[in-house]
Length: 422
Image 1: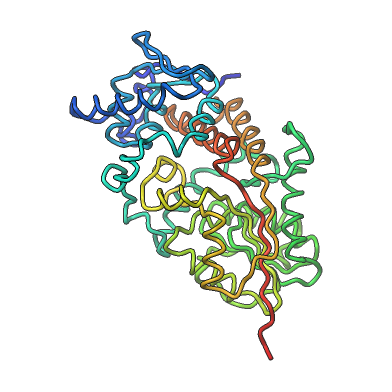
Image 2 (image 1 turned 60 degrees about the vertical axis):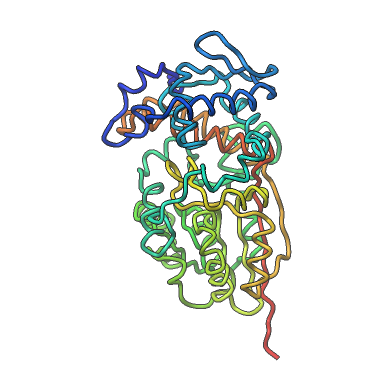
């Protein structure tokens, strides 16, 4: 059994496809001045954190705590000085730094995210932070491409680290610590709570925005609901349709390759699980207005959404992040305040209930990360190179750290639409 492979920077780069990962193969060119300034800013930030940052020359920073080993300080500083936090993630992908307990180290950084960059530089963020490419705007065509780049990677890849329900969102556990054998039941508990919130039962006309691999649609149809489920991923649509057919529910479930903006009809309930994160701030009003328009008077919408602090959302909404470049192109997390503002200003939906359960997502991600690590050889056999495997490990650990630090949260919302007829 092989763990996620920490390697030296030189060895890592030999195991990377330069045509696919040109930004990882070699660090960017950078002036001595820029690199020196980056080194000074990072030294000032890191020396006060509860970390042990160890450099190849023997120097150290931090007040103690989880260890970060910087194997190639020059490349590390050049990447961060040129590309900011995108460069920090690329430096990990290149093997220029490692951490024996990656989640613990990233949790410290997430817990101090708002204080890592000095206030004067924060105010100049628009000058130094990378800007989001126009090509990743979530227009109807752009959204299809963005979704495909993540969800059409390989059904086999996702099956290697997800449980048998193929649920790719936060589970709801009865207690901690969570264990792998309990994950499928916890995913069903999450789905059932959403279906209960939306009062899905026999004869319910249900619209699902974001199919995943079909588990929610199957579970809703087993209650007797008639389900229309929308996805932009061909891989997900095809596998979800097969799973529905295997359950003998084809007459109750229709899975369509369709943008949410193209949805038609009226439904008693709408459910959407962790899909709004892919919408983008530009289209949040359209997304929530679609939920509103598709719901019959008196209907109920149940939504599961990852959220971040409002001030951090405002600060980062126009910048280009590592997670957008490598994992979720076009993605952006909302804040609780943003959800309230958009629904209030653009819809007749009103929040009836909101249940946060971020600690459960941390445990879900831990189980996925451990499973991915245990099956690294199988991931490699599918054709995913070392940089991809380190990228995916970093993505799962980075996300888990966000929830453990409380920087990220996940919410289950119930929105109701009151009957406005006289």
